[in-house]
Amino acid sequence: MHIIVCIKSVVTDAPRGKIIRTADKCALNPFDRPALEVALRLKGKHGGSVTVLSMGPPTAAATLREALALGADRAVLLCDPALAGADTLATSTTLCAGVRYLAPFDLLLFGTRTSDSDTGQVGPQTAVLLDISMVSGVVKIDGPFECLHVEREVDGFLEVYEVVPPTALTIHPTAAAPRDPALGSIAVAFDEMPVETIGIGQLGLDPKQVGDAGSPTRVLSMKPVQRNRICRWIEGTPVAQADALIRQLVDKGLIG
Image (tube, rainbow, N blue to C red; front, side, top):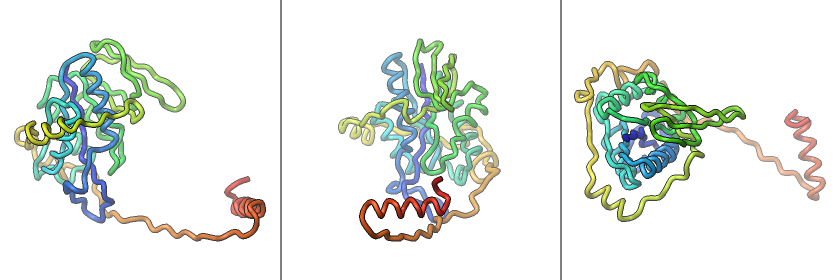
């Protein structure tokens, strides 16, 4: 059994203009942690190996090493100057090539979204490019590995699917509580375990397919939203304050 988990090194500081991914301002995407935890539990139950795959600059290697410390067996970083400026489609194109490079595989796992862009598109787009089945927002995985039963909750319904590998899943944040790495595992991951770096040449990709050149969408500008808030004090006893607050909310049409 071979499980590939796609993870991302996300920006933790609100960017002003162009995003510069430095080691001190990046971390493992929190929505990828449950996906990695699910992979590690499946490995513990069924055996096999877990590979973590990421696209990013050299600083993203620290995130991959964190995944190794948590229990992943192999870490691969897709890193090339041509990959800079990628939108979700160009990212999915690159990850698709990376997954094919690592094939064969049985499961391809993603987090539901990323904390720094929040589109939720990369997992489904990658599955479409690979021409494999996809179930999103999975909360539970059960059954024999040859024919898994996966559950997801959506719009008040519990849906149960039967999936046959190879297949892709996005893992809901509630599916599993991520573990913490042991200190000894951190030392081994950062001092001894390798992070493989692969460029677009090894993936057979043309520079026009990826990065800014292969992105049909572009971020034109980015700036914080100005919020104008007015604080108004309400005097009197607690009962009088409550009555005055309710009257104000009713007058503004905020409550009926």
